[in-house]
Figure 1 (tube, rainbow, N blue to C red):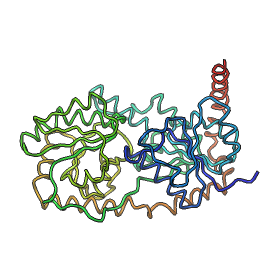
Figure 2 (figure 1 turned 180 degrees about the vertical axis):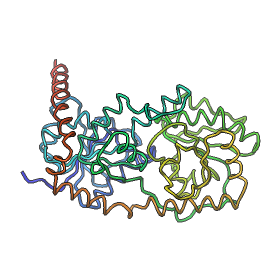
Figure 3 (figure 1 turned 90 degrees about the horizontal axis):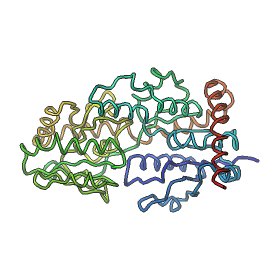
Figure 4 (figure 1 turned 135 degrees about the horizontal axis):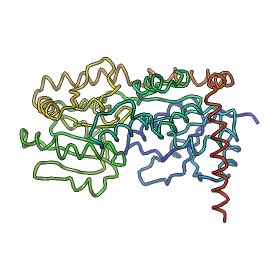
Length: 408
């Protein structure tokens, strides 16, 4: 059977671009492949929620699939995709062996979103009130994630720091990695310093780094800023806030937790400064990139700014010490000339590092190159073949056992 120019995306969740950077990332990947004339099918085991993107509206076929079910085998054999893209390593663990067995010549791409083992290692260090070290990386999560990277033909990375980490700490061949960050561009019209007021934070509350950040703002950072700028407000936005998040709302100090923003860019571009003192995390931060395109200077941590600006000046300040963070936030909020220079810095970062045109041709060409030389590419990654063999020998039979158990 001759394969069509088709792409199957196996999603961890259905994309919600108005709820998270991960959702925006997935829509950008879809746009890249659609522009290259791929027929796209998106499939997921997750529930399609109220705020999920209507993919059928843009010509994408959708399919609900089941875990531990041979119905997926029938589905993918009939579809016979040329490329399969796994949305995060957990999805590759669940379906990678089935893809390899049913469509052995399909190019397998993994989109990491961020490096999960790095994010979780940093989170553990924060919970234990100590400094993160590279020794923290070598966890069970890392073993699973690195194995998934090795089993795939190409892994997409949003962070140059994480690409370097994979090569230096885990000895991953550069030929298996491709740097493809979030895309962005400056908005055509952004309010001036004089026409803006207040501070903002935005982030999906299903993402643990955002929860921790808001608690840190509420308990440590904002009370001090409020004592210096009593008229200013901090607006906290984010999809899926739980009760504990909403309880942080404190009108006495102008700390306002508002939940989901209908239009994220609108609330960001009308704020004077974004605050994002992230204490752990990985990847690049969509909220900070959106702040740059909205011309909104930010104060963040070294974790927040990691790998985002390259050798360019940040659009505000990068501070880890809470006192320095507060002082920087107040200076940025109060000083028009400092604010305007920071805004220009952000525009420069967006222009030089995050425009789609900088990456799309190289990305599609890389895919074509690997497809044309797939056997040689896989032979050069023999460790990946070994891991694929053992995954098929273990996960395959566990999955089949679960399927039989479910039938009974």
